[in-house]
Length: 395
Image 1 (tube, rainbow, N blue to C red):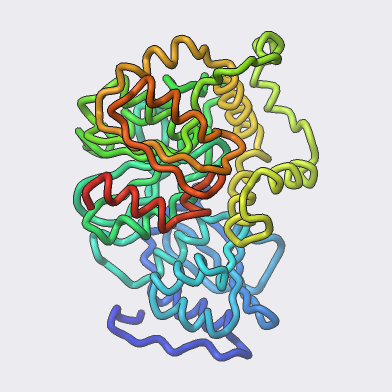
Image 2: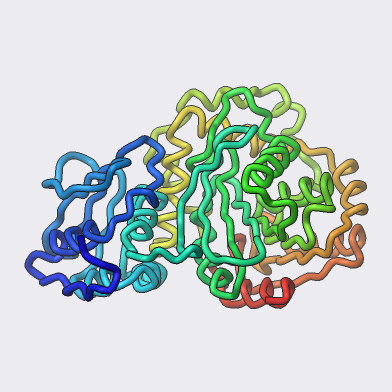
């Protein structure tokens, strides 16, 4: 077993994947693995080179010959693998720049890199599934200090906040990104309502399980609507709130509302369309075209959506967004107490920036920032978004 002070040798181009796997497994900390199914098969591949599988379970990992379809695929060129085995920041930087591809399952791929970093720093990047009174909730945590809780958008996962974690954790904050129930690797109860109240109860349960009496909170899209709900429900527990392109109750006509009320979200338990068709639709909605982030984001969506429980949760949550009664929502919003920052995308096709004037009328004390981007600022304009968040939180 290599010590944390050993200097690993870079992988040779003719056997890069096998060598990289051996070096990483020497540093593997099994206690840092969070494997939702108890075990996993990862494939490490060198572009235009060799590939090898890594088998993981609660006791550790082992190298195996490639076999079948892996649970996650990590692919890079030899030089990038040499950087990845040196340290975790190099690996995450390579991923952010598109030099390292992580496909099929970001949870498993990034968890493997984090668990093989060789770090025992208390603030290291860690994946943890937390048992709560509202079911198991999967989290991604990094940093030490005051907590910041992050909630993803509809169809997303905690992995959508990887750029935010990298941008905030080094500044003395403990950043906690969570999979909302029904999404990612959290529990997916079949009969749940998946409305803002249901999600907000899960957020409070997660805070209680983590021993967090108070935390700043950041919510994106659906997570922004959930953030508003939980902050209005328990304002004393949230010093500040950041709402990133938040889902808000529709103000225009909703012609399909009467019919949609008759449709049960449990119909999502049936597969309504083949995976290739769903993938084409999602590609049109995810910003970035064929970028590595877009591809990884589509994978994250599909791995939940292609399960019966994940589809039911997605349809229920989307249905509730569309059917929310605007008169009740906007009246309640007037009572928002904690300081709030709203972030809008000037080119957002889902939550138009024109919502800002309605929020200003309801919450005149709130702050606003409009960025030149679409619906996912943490991916499209990360530097500008994180600068605004750091300024608002006083980081």
